[in-house]
Length: 351
Image (cartoon, rainbow, N blue to C red; front, side, top):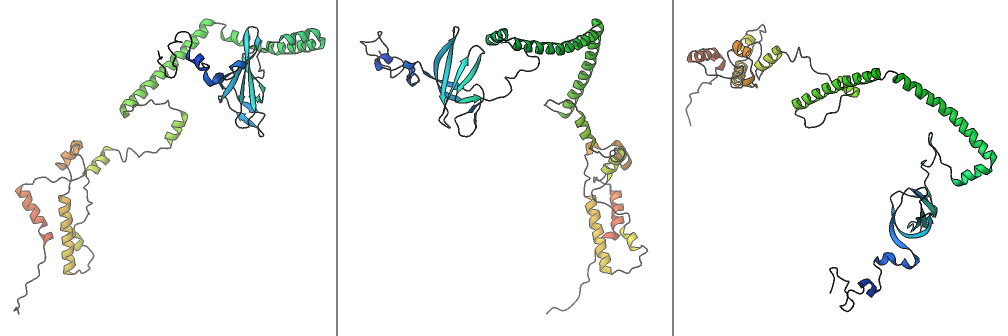
């Protein structure tokens, strides 16, 4: 019976006695186990740290995390832990690189074709304790001068560490001589900082509600205050006062002149004008007045102050229905201004 995976047919005579791989003479791992007789298995190896390739003609670095198809092989034991070697080929130059596991130091060691990049991690820093190996202990036991040098270095380091330890102890005794007072200072500072944080949080939430912001606002900094100081706003007493707003709303769309046409004609300029120029000027003035009366002011009638309505008797700039008496007075006032010149008819015989 054929299994669920295609290509692994087992004849009925051999079913239950052998497998498809044995019948086909293949390994279960396929091409990865082509050197299984030599104890080598092909695996995917990822570089644990950056290394320099020594086979390349120019210095070439292989970064951490680069993957290779490596030949995995057991080369020894550290007590009961096996030591494996990973041998891979660098495609840039064709050289071979071998890396082995180090169970003793729980690390990887480059043994052939490359060297580890020095990043300073292997150096001993201040305060770190270095454990001596068995070989170093044996050498110190057999070499008196080496043991003396180590003792002198340890005494010098102990003197330096002693002074630092005494400083730390004095600082600790000074801060924690009275635990209750120290705790009281800490709790007081925490309460003050908490009140400041709560106040800033309330101001931030109020600003977000007022500006309808759905984002998180960062706390204010000195740089923000400095940049905000560069912004200059208008004088609220001059441009933002109630008088200025009232004047701006009551001002019509078209500017009016202080003197009328009749005053300009009868002014101190005794220049003689032609009759046609006077008629044209009257027409222009009549057209301007008609446009001004038929034009609404650019204001919102729902936002007009009550003071403006009381003083002007209505919304300035908006035409309203007039009574018959007002219309008669307006016609009598504008009658001289809309005098239209009509040329006389000439009586002649037609051909």
